[in-house]
Length: 333
Ligand code: 13P
Image (cartoon, rainbow, N blue to C red; front, top):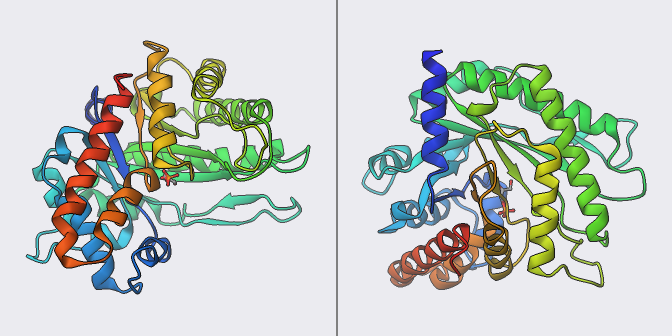
């Protein structure tokens, strides 16, 4: 039980009011897409510069409780040779680690995928713990396509993988974030998004409970509930807020430690506006905040433009974006 107390403390730190999580856990390939935005080749030193700007920006600890890293970044250091994880820990920001190894096709289920990464996970967690990680992320992908997609079978198999990951994480003293990402791309309606997100989240939590995962030491990372990006009617913020909170009330046990959002390819402005509308609905059974990647990084990347002389400006923009999302998480915009 002693270990679980530690898990609860980590979860509480991550969900502290007015703070959120930066998801800087791009694989090296995806980091290359970010660098492409600033016309830099995808080379280790450019990835290091990008991450160093993110992790050393002055003042962000006021608004960020945690940062999710990728295997190569948790092993990386600043130019001065200080491990990134130590830089974050020293600032009171909890280091986290993405541990899933991406998806593979689910044979027999057209277009559906299953997330990989359970092999040697206990050993990997031990190493990540020694490197400073105290929470982790595993993402499953839920695509809304034809009438029957996602299938319950795909949701179940992914939820079982998620439950095994969560058990192994908690046994290692690491808080699992479970992320069923309902993909925003597509022409599906708000109603369809709500139905699918509710179903996926219900199956996930039923499975987590069946496998005796400790809800108080676990965080849900959810998509906001909204119509697909190609649907003719883009969902206004108050409708996103109502559908999202309704979904959580139908699917998330009240003893789950808390809920954080991915931005899912929405613009930074829209992600923040929707978060603010959700917070404005008032207190919920769970703390709710942000865990954005693109919605936090894009403005900072624009300001940086891959140039040394813009690094301070990029850090200021990052701070501003984090501050805005902090306010939004409190419904104060
Ligand atoms: P976005 O905020 O860019 O959707 O990324 C969050 C995330 O962690 C996706 O796995």
